[in-house]
Image 1 (cartoon, rainbow, N blue to C red):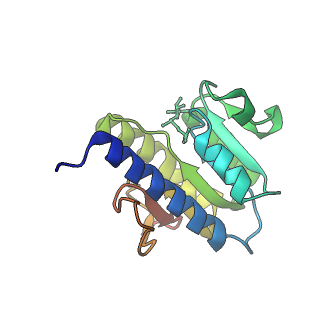
Image 2: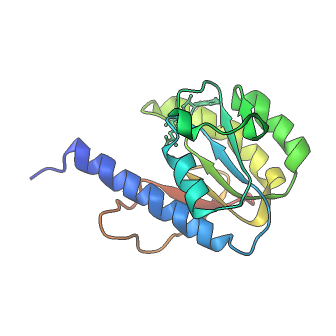
Image 3: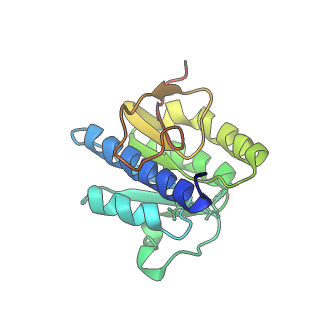
Length: 167
Ligand SMILES: C[S@@+](CC[C@H](N)C(=O)[O-])C[C@H]1O[C@@H](n2cnc3c(N)ncnc32)[C@H](O)[C@@H]1O
């Protein structure tokens, strides 16, 4: 039987959770804030704050539409297009970010590629060399990191991990 869209979505979300949780373990001893690019309805933001208690999490979003429980306070929110807000963040957090999760994509592959190309040049200046970049689409220009076998139910090749340094 063909894999249904529901099963694909579940597999992708399971891969997302596995990559975020591996990233969180990898930065356990690494100081620095977490960046969440794309709040959406706040699912991954909520998970990150649960698995990284006490860690500052800064959210980048152009339009807040999340569950009210999952909206960060003003001090942790960069409201606007990432093309405008990321340059400001680099000035403030240069080289200090421990984990960055970017889920600003959708179904439009060309648009995803353009957004990724906007974000990638900032990574080496923003994220610690030992830090981790977790993404919902492949980010060309960063060093891919193999998360290893994913838990049962997680669909390999649907969520991605990188090191920040350009190869
Ligand atoms: C797929 S959703 C994020 C879902 C979220 N990770 C979750 O689990 O709920 C993508 C979000 O990125 C935001 N976004 C897309 N492009 C953006 C841009 N250029 N600047 C700021 N936000 C952007 C959209 O508004 C949308 O809310």
